[in-house]
Length: 310
Image (cartoon, rainbow, N blue to C red; front, side):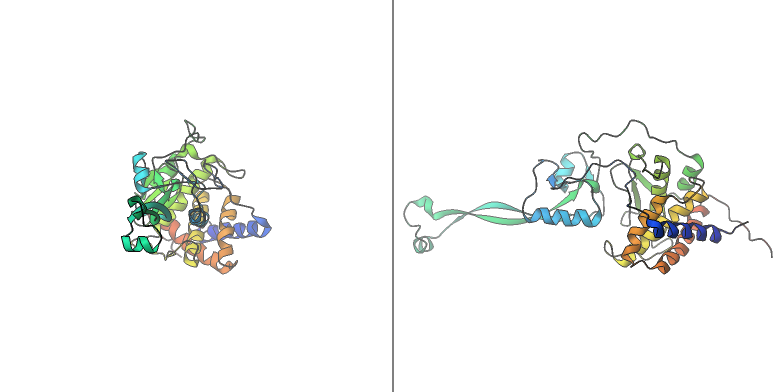
């Protein structure tokens, strides 16, 4: 009988082979609104202007937001949605007209003497505000972006039991899959949102996504205490993504969600491997950490196996 290490090593080697053949581009496996070229306010539907366009584009591209809708904390609240705890806003600048009164002496110097109203003047006054993308909130679905009434797949009881046994807090809804280290909670799009990809069924995509985020959850400081990146796309962040996706690949095979590692795993991993300058050693190191995460996750639902005597 093969050891767990051998199984994981075989999956890792197959993923590497797929990357070397050309994995292709990763496709998001759930239903999301197509991104528009210009960011707009979710409440007023007006397009942002000037430097605000650049600010929102930079954040959107860095984090990977597909939605082009943004709004302030209050605007989202007024719409019946709420910003997830721990989410960071993106700064924008807006101008208000500030009325000022110019003293007589200054008015005369400026050639404004005469009628009393000429001593009054309005000037543009810049103020900063922070807005949040639609993918940072819960309870909001863009108009015309309704989900199917029923999921496109059946749930797998034994896999659901493994996930539930961890007691990880998972909230379903929204358009983003993530683990929030501040709240120690996982966010997953509603199961009806999963449509799969050309190389993955909706069922495979759903469970792989959940298990990916559960691996992040397992790496928390008070669990496996894995180092996480301090900012998006730094080396530690990329390495953590390798671990989580390899964990998902291992678990999908071990729990019989798939018989073979999906091309989607290779596509996702290839993106982050580029950030590590195609360092294969990093992939093997991540595989070791992923194996530890798999053992940790499965231990909640499976009795410890006694080692066979030599």
